[in-house]
Image (cartoon, rainbow, N blue to C red; front, side, top):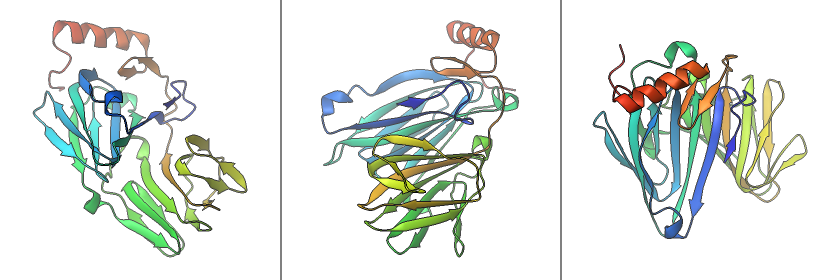
Length: 256
């Protein structure tokens, strides 16, 4: 788990990597629990997850699929794991909502692997879950086109010795390597390491031995962040209100 609720990754808050080939590590899953004030994006590499929420959505995603929740005013959901021959390997990303959207109606959507466009160069591939991604000769847009903070998320795979150069000027640009290794400007990024990149208009990823990574791009909200468990608001009083709403049963009522 990598997180920064102090604004250091704005508009992103947390990236959880869920992975094990031991069923006892995850078989209990994530029973019903609430969220308010954020978006969550879950992406599966191996295995799967079954989502259910109080709005009546029920969906199972498998390897290569993703699900997105705009929690807004409030959503109560559960995620129960499934396995394949390699166990479970998935990611959950929390994206902060701007103040104007924190009490908006909750929504849910799942995205299948076949819906995600690919951008390919020699020995390199990028698959777009959301946002716009481009090289000097190709441009693709992921199906999740309304992420908070104008965010984009992509899965990059490099073969040994391969390189990928992207044109991007996103103010927040993060690289999380989850397999193998990569380099940016000769600086190595090892497995299970997150790099936050400085400003610029191009990003070149290289890998001597091959690797896979998630790319996160977005625009910061520059707003105060108040965090308590599954709730992320702007001020402590709003967290207190979320707790009162959850206790009195009004938390998940439809927002107006």
